[in-house]
Image 1 (cartoon, helix red, strand yellow):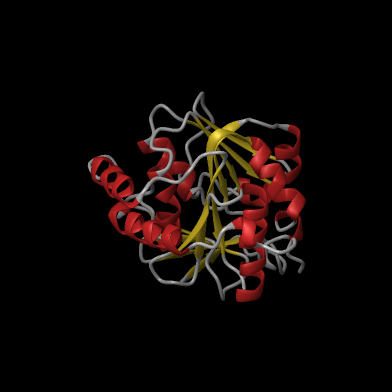
Image 2 (cartoon, helix red, strand yellow):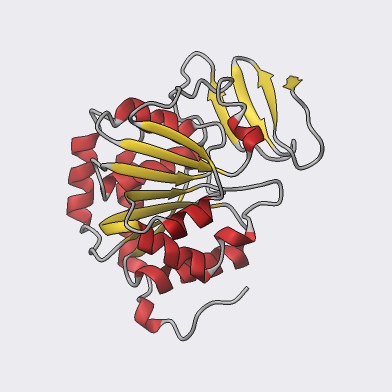
Amino acid sequence: MKRLRQRPAGQPFICQERGEVSLHFGMATVQSRMRVATPDKLVLDYTRGMMAFLLLAPEPRHIVMLGLGGGSLAKYCHAHLRHTRFTALEISPEVIAMRDLFAIPPDDDRLQVLCIDGAAWLYDNPACCDVLMLDGFDADGLPPALCSQAFFDDCAAALQPGGVLVSNIWAKDSLRAVLVERLRQSFGDHVATILAEDGENTIALASKQAAMPCAAELHERARQLSAKHAVDLSSSAAKLAQALATAPKASALREPATL
């Protein structure tokens, strides 16, 4: 394994091995992974899971994502959603400096990468998008600024009516439960969670002011999208239908969650 641009503890670095490039904050976890021969392919299972948002918003006009990483989701959406504008908010200039190593296309009229505090940007830009993707992590995991009830309220405010939030939740069980409950405080009953293929990441989906599709609609949308997208949306549809059938009602929540 060849490590490039090693940095002080907590700073991102790159590893190259067997035709793949990966982004790390530490060797124990992989933040992003790319196959050099197919840079637009979604290699990590959680990134494929996050594309389940297509079942709720098949043709979004504007996607905003917190956390660029190696740009896997940005590249996939840029390549496969040809009529969608994509804005990535990344707080780390060191991560953005690696975009060429991960074959992230240059900014154009459909793709923009901003070096900015994503939480602050969302607060300042209400009703800015119809899909919001949350995948922001640092060396310590999920930053506290991306875990508060106020942050999830800002996420709901950033979406257009009918918009969709999709979040990668990689955290211990207790924090995961708190975050999902906070999503329900912000989005009401329109929240569901599914597991990524390997089961280590939870993918949360929330819809603003719109009911989730029924199981039959989800499976039909997956069938229609299968020709356009190289991800297993049929599996995601089955998981999402099951999650919606068993999800607790927000009205049953007694009080806001606390860490």
